[in-house]
Image 1 (cartoon, one colour):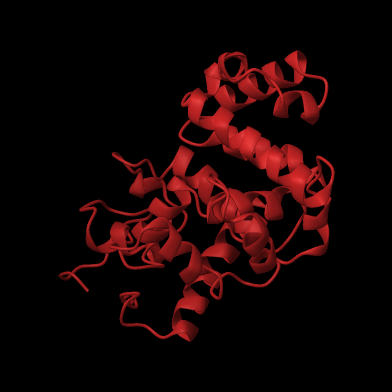
Image 2 (tube, rainbow, N blue to C red; image 1 turned 120 degrees about the vertical axis):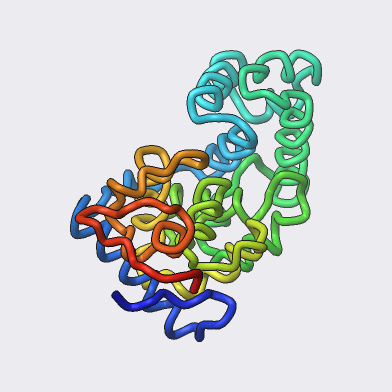
Length: 247
């Protein structure tokens, strides 16, 4: 079996081919995932701010509570801070998140004259980051999630789980942080496949590629994964494990 290159030593062309191979395997074996269509980008920004350092369930509970308590973004903006923090407590880090949500709303009202992020519909990712990236919490991850999931842009979000799996597969060097991984993956993901690959990697991390106990013997991409073949010490499906030392 052909040995897999170290990402720090491989050309962009080689790494692009590696990412394409993994993308193709997931789509062939698990199918294409349906995008739900455009949503309000301001809703997306607030939901993503709530999602930081928590799970989807807690985010959704906090967002539902926010919508039930306040009938407009103006009311969220001018809400009593302690009350707002209490409403979104299920999301965790509630005081930090309340501060960031109100700061976002204040900036939108002051800059654009209304509580809207619809201007993002006309922007590409880099311009969107230039516009809102100075706000606390509006990171590469936050903006890429909104652009990809809410606006259907071909931007590949890198959250904690995708970052871990990209390093484990060997798409990026293990020493990379999430921002470096995001920047490195931008030219590698096949055109039009950002949404698909992101969700396939999320699902793969939940079902197979566990952070502590990956199930390499059940992995669809074992033969394309540096960790599985060279570090896990486990046999892949059909005894695909390659003999030999570290590549």
